[in-house]
Length: 166
Image (cartoon, rainbow, N blue to C red; front, side, top):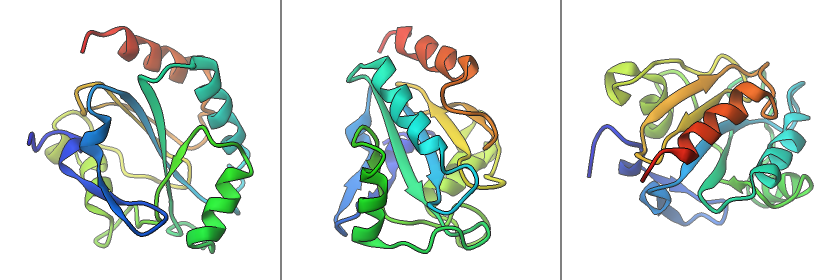
C-alpha cells in the first residue's frame, strides 16, 4: 500500500464498522469536515447539488463530522445520519473525528501535512474545509470553508481530475 495516498487509511462508518479508503481507488474525492450547527452548514445542500450535477460514479463526497470548532457538532451516530440524510443521500458520512491537533485522526493528519501527503499542507481552520483527492489517492488541492462547493474553482478542479486517466 502506498503510504503517500489516502488508501492506507481505515475509517469508521456511522454504524461502527470500519472500512478501508482503498475501496475508493480510482475515484475523485472531495473530503469535507462538517458540523450540524455551523454558519457554513448550508453548504451541505451545496455538496448534494455538486454531487448531483456531476452525476458520475467516479466522484464521491466523503463527510467527516467534527466537533473541533466551537463545539458545533454535538450529534452522534444515528442522530448524525438523520441530520445528514435530511440534505439528501448523495454524500457518504462517516463517524465523527478530530481533524486537527495532536488527537486528529490519522487520515486528517495525512491530509493536512505536506510531509506526509507529499503534495501540499493545510490543516482545517474551521468546519467545511475541503480536500480534493485525485484518482491516485493523493491530495490535489484544498479549499477553505468560505469556498462554496458549487463554485467554478471546485467544479473545474473536480472535472480536471475526472478527465485525467486512471
